[in-house]
Amino acid sequence: MSDSPFAIWFKKTREKKDLTQIEAAEQLGLSSPTISRWETGTAPRAEHLQRICTWGPVKPDKLILFFE
Image (tube, rainbow, N blue to C red; front, side):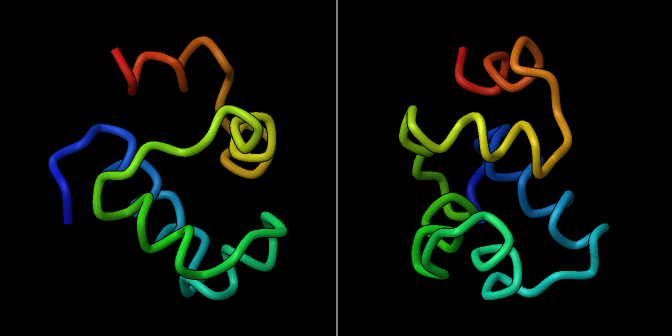
């Protein structure tokens, strides 16, 4: 796992929801390789941020702090 704040947050959030990467991907309407990339340090694309905020849930202003 990456030391990226987003990667750490995303994986912890997924695990708190008791979801596999595949299940999280299905909920977000994405592929499981995308989730895997996020958890190993790749930042999500801008078009995915709203889905992440809703799924998290996390407020956009908090989410953006992960990328500063």
